[in-house]
Length: 272
Image 1 (cartoon, rainbow, N blue to C red):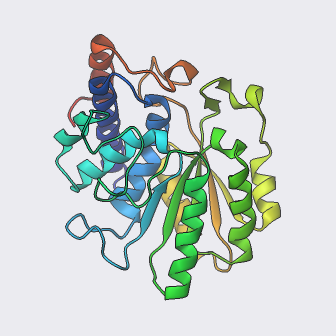
Image 2 (image 1 turned 180 degrees about the vertical axis):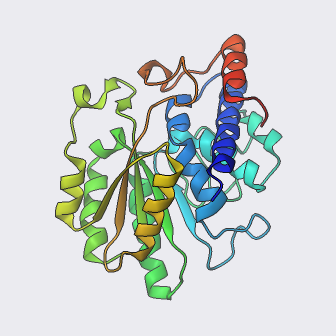
């Protein structure tokens, strides 16, 4: 497997994030950048999807439970061919379809409108259950923020998914350690995450969320695990790929100005 290919795609996705948020003058770059490698791996290798037929019955589905990171999903969908990449620069524009949080009724490739934290995880479990009942081979992937784990609905879903043996469900936790108010451990600790999910009956994997070899190995293990869902705890860095944003909670929900955008895009190698 050519990991350099995926690294380049992830850099392009990050450029899309930066340009879109800068054009909007608002948005959430930090958590979008931390998730870019994970989202790239899904859209450019892991998932069975077709940009020409986004509603095909047996497709795999991705739900962005941390909906405020919508720019990373928009950028990945654009680069995958679901719509022109220039459209993403209309992020958060009045009357536009690229809202601050994904809207399944307006953007092709979006499987669930998300924003209120915790709900995307619950919806993903419901989709996995529906596929089981329908004997649909499509797999369900859901990306969850680590700050999002402070929501009660998360733990209701964490309890129910193993009960229904949803081995077609893979949850990915973007463990970047930061939320809008600072470090997760200072706001409200939810550790130990691995032990909690294991206690509910999940297959628990812990990886470097910026390492494509580890990401793909984890996805392979998830597909071969039978009888229970898999959770991948992906250690990441908020703002990864842009040095002045990395591991800085201040970039959770702040748009770069023109000079900052120029510097960030240059550091990432340009394009999009």
